[in-house]
Length: 422
Image (cartoon, rainbow, N blue to C red):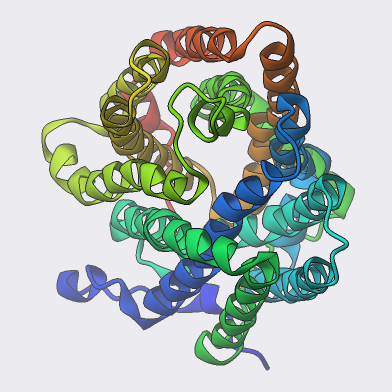
């Protein structure tokens, strides 16, 4: 009979309870390696794309197709994650990525690469991302003690940022110089290594045992309905949906503002990943400051302040299109974004039962990420016809307006009242 990770008792010894444990650190390692591959592709694919086209509309489709699967498959993925072994879901997704990346590397080597091939690949890769990311996030309460959820989330998000930006970005810059075949072949090997780590390093069955037998359709409806009615989740998801729409419009064409002879900044392609290190630096420092900040400010006010600080600084690249000014703005954005994301993830894990985290996460992602493809397309169209500054200023205004709903409805007292005791 398979071992079920959920069934393991939690020790009552306070010192034992504070340890994150071996299972968490294996999970953390798998997140780090998977995000290294993501980081190489996140930076490398747009750099390859700008060598194939300078059209803001075509470049924006890269972001649109990356996020479209969250709209199409987010709720379904949540049901799958709650009804099956979350570890196996991650392994299957990683296996599919290996095949996709190997095929794309072969096409690059044989000279069959085009902007439309890249767009289709990004869409298929995005489908695996929906399932892999939801399963990984939902596993955190299964591999870490409840008393350390904020710390566990900050470590996972820090690993995400470090390996996706600090490591993945510079690696992508080197691989782009070596050739597109290397750019896609190396992530394929990294995904294969991550798959083997999960297969042999994280044993056990990570299915959440359901108290009542229900159908998949009932689970799907239940997760969506609970999220819509939830007094804590609803304003956060509403804000995220609007802000993500605007943010994707902004960053889908940001590379055109910074890279190339016709850009405002005039950076060379190989230097662009170094600029993104400012975001990573802010995010990593923020992740290690969260525990300290929580001693002085409770969760909800801290999350709100992070969001309030994060959005206005995005006008800096328009006002001062220089590398130092943009780097400073991106650093603040990374710090605030990490803080807000860690706190919001921790709050969700506190107010949602473990057995519903997949469904709630899938439903929330469908709404929060569902407008992002439209945002990317909007950014491309506006940038094409009205200019990039209009995209950046307009997106910043929309992001700031999105904060009104949670600011007037959320409080720490409400979160404490709705915390689930398991």
